Length: 125
Image (cartoon, rainbow, N blue to C red):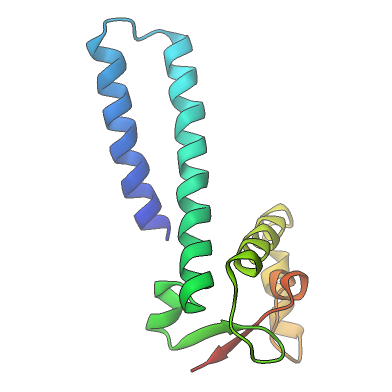
């Protein structure tokens, strides 16, 4: 996900950078606007990527390659809404400096903080 997101944002930054340089008005305010737009686009691409793949397939391409799938406790498939909640829960994990992922190592069900918040499970297909 990071590679896909990085390539898209780098391409957009090049386009925006060329556009501000072409006008000859490449000022600090243009750079600030570019930074805000880049951040918004990066967040939108990241959210869209996770929510689309998890909502539609129950896994991101990386999880699919590893033979993993995200499901609900009753075995039902993921929805787009639940995928978004899981993404928000992973955002909470980033605030804990990844400790939420470490919880899975000591949990009997191997569920991280984001799985507990979103009420999901990761299984082998």
